Image (cartoon, rainbow, N blue to C red; front, top):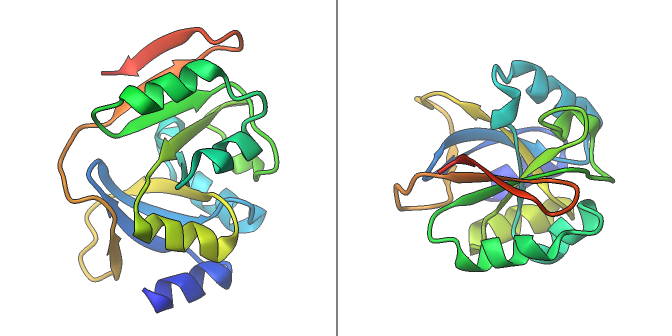
Length: 160
């Protein structure tokens, strides 16, 4: 794990495995590598900003709507929230002109990675990882839920 942390600190990307698939991730504030990874993503709606604490979400999603707390508290599966605006992150983190896809992962491994870069991580899905060092994040195989929040707190289920 020390090698992966060093790579993130050095502005490089690493690979993680979640219950929802494999991702190549980097420091979300590093514009150069975020843009490079973003260009490799075939489906922009699959990009994710990974955090380990709600306070990190609040720092980058201004006026985080209260309904999001309820959604996160009641989620029984991995949950990604498509949020209507963001700040203090590279523009390439967005899934479209103004929105980001936020995934909260509360485990010690994600916490160590986020702490290493002092902020969120940005990731794009990748296929099978044959000969790569992969950091395992989640052990279960639960399907991801994706919910979009409108500017006024409107909730739309994208993927149930």
